[in-house]
Length: 390
Image 1 (tube, helix red, strand yellow):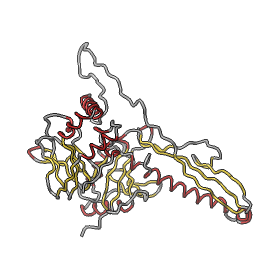
Image 2: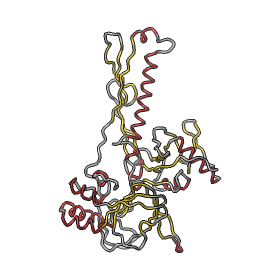
Image 3: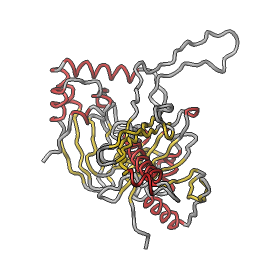
Image 4: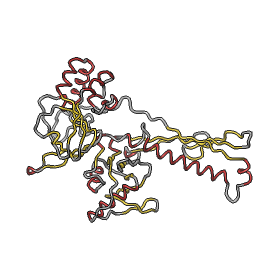
């Protein structure tokens, strides 16, 4: 039975991102062919005609390139939800520049170039989108896919200088502050009589605020709109080579950004990384954060966060962040100066006393998080929690 593809999932692929016709997207989805590939099989081979788009539904594959002295080199790993071949699908007479080989048993979906061309002949909307995508590929771009800035250097005399402009986003994303709220109820008897040696109202308020901050942290990681897990750029996602996180995997994700401030992952993943280091005879350094020693890799602290999910397959992600507005990093958002502000971005507002003499306080916190540029946030996806080596 073929795995269904949703129109929203197809829009994640740049080629189909500009299509607004759901009927066309649904027809494209129906043209994908499902294949079951065994471990160790070659999906595509370097030098062969590149004439298909390949989606990885389930499993892990390895991209292999040509190294020096006729050796091979690993270009990267792809797993569930990844794809390749979208650019080659609209180009003529091109060949694969790499080989893709399965690491595990895989389920893949493929769309042939001839099928897309036939559909484009019948659909004006699809034909227009394909032409737009071709035009985008022809534009001068840097390694990040951004419009190139033409610069002259190394010239002598009165040479004609190049002219340029800096492309920018005309409609940048707007972030609305999320709210987490609850109502704290305290009986007046407690507030009047049980306030020595500890003020019970203050203590209950403190615990309520801590619970709200915990929910805030969960939303900043997992929220489908602004959460960090859902805002990692595709080219900033890497996959482990063998399952559990290794020093090579952390080096790979670190190499994709400058000024990495810290790793963020589940405590069980930290333990798994420690076991991999011990297996290799490597002993990671430690650093001190607010008086507490924590494990570090390449000088970057590895901080625990139990808000990161663990899947049924016992895997969990590893995030790495560059922070601060001055470094174009990840920044937390909150509003100060709100009415009845108790802490920055958090208000405690007295509501009423009901007929049962119960005091009610509305406790609210407003927050969000923004990734200023794509390379501020990276992720090692689906790192495996493995048992110690025997």
